[in-house]
Length: 174
Length: 246
Picture 1 (cartoon, helix red, strand yellow):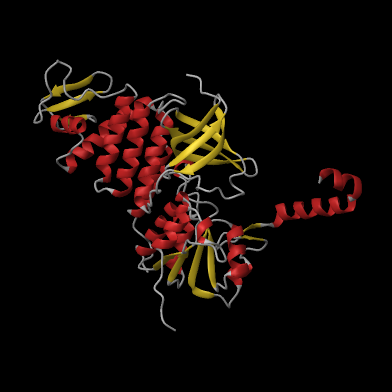
Picture 2: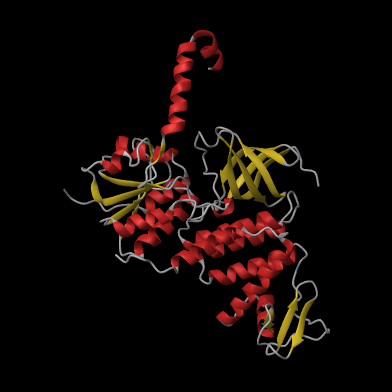
């Protein structure tokens, strides 16, 4: 890429450099949800049309974009910017959990959807966020883990399959 | 002991992993035949491996190379993984950190591997999580040659369950009459409970925790355990009164 830009597209390289420099200067974290944004509040927090009673807790800004693009979710978010990783010394303070507690206390939230990754660190984080909700009498739910849509059971690993079996759902008649 | 260049399907548990370059990871493992090793797993963050390279999943690991950092060439599942959620996970991270900090790399100790395997299975599912942790700490110190003297006091007499002792870490328990204060004063019953691994009451467990923590701190070289700091921070948060009640 460096050779291509230097030899064939110096204008493009200049634009890219300016765009990166602008981004470094102007993009910060949303004061409410810690999503990346150029203003004090991100567009999702500013929007009046989101459901204020639903809060989805995710690990990274990229997770917000992933859920926004696909899941038809209408509530708001909180971005932890990581997960609990005690062996790396990453605890509640590094994840902005003070800020999350403030949101839980001050906003009309009824349900918190914990959408951390299905890793052991993600589970530990989910447990802790769940405790914060329970101590306030809020409903906390965890996203389901299972077989990918369009996938085949034969090729799914044992861990995922056992999660999928444990999280099975009753087949309700129409 | 030098490692052979290629090892195939060795029983192992992953203790910790951290990102390395764009798509790889550096993984710390404890293995049955080769002690604790560090391995690079190339590309495992971008393509999903057949078995998740995660702590608390029993695996058979294969690798090539000698020296400090080997290259992981494969991992196969070795039985069902431990399905753990919640608080017990944090205790299991603590067990992993103790093993990482107190054992030396490539030191062949099958006993430590079995101790680790039994402990995390116990902590994951059995009652009395704290007893499993104390037994692990005590057995790990024993296996590493730092075992506490629990049956004989510094005067050479047998430890009595109803007496009190001031514990000097590198010497042993010294019998005292006044047991009111002093950081490492424990009952003989506690010492015998650590030895036998079965505790009669919460008081003994609490004394054992203080004694074992002090003993481990001595061998941790002054660097505190990160998991313990995070756990303490979480505990102090959950007991903190909230300003705004909903």
